[in-house]
Image (tube, rainbow, N blue to C red; front, top):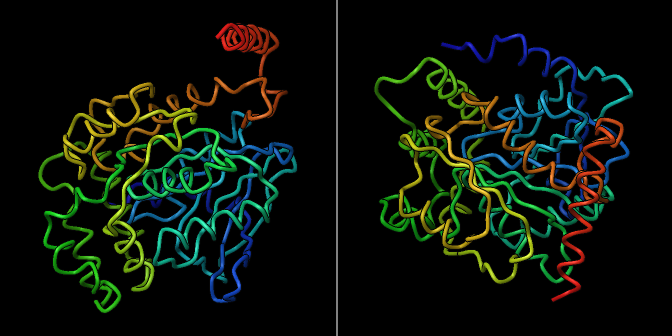
Length: 338
């Protein structure tokens, strides 16, 4: 089944989003590829970071919906784009940044490269949506830049805060230092081992098929580096990002994330908003996109009317802005009284 790959929405996304490439590291082989759509005037967009098996395209539902509502979006992946792909432009009213990042083998290296990219794009602060490994990288980037904050808020989907949860697997114990030596087919087999099997609803099956298709586009270096980052001994230090607004999105059905890992996230962010999906598996942003998009919109709405809004002000009603300004004023008075 390839329902997503041949769907009108996906084909519209592929045919209307222009491609750019940016080099920000001293190493010219490290190329960031990006697609853009959404309001150009927005200086605090939402950025999407994919899981190990994903590319920037896995968030196409979010890109289409959010830019349609007036948001500026950036979606990040490690897949280098096909230079022969068509690059038609969108109308001048919107711009979406959909990024593809180079191969990084170390968390510090990734954070440094991502910071340089934000500098190049002249983005002081951003909102980050991360799925699985993408969520962990989002948290580490927020932690890495806590002295000069670059992350205003986090949306963490089926994510984790400590890579030790993978220490019980044969992958982590035997292969952590050998990923770079493994052939691509074996790396793909490791990743596919975490995909759900057995009976499931058609949308979840289509999502898995699409992710398998995306996985096939990743080369050996991209997969090896992602698995290395995923299993590198590291954890999030919550006291460094305690002022960052967080929403946690997770599912109640089967996913690669254990119940213990989910509970650890709740403990780490006791004040976070929680968005639970009854079903959705590993990829709810594909098979439950309407619900995920709603939770993203609810999360971003708290910043409407501020300098950190990710939406075109013209798309926000005067009544909503008035309510938001009143809410902000009450919060400021509360802070002053303390």
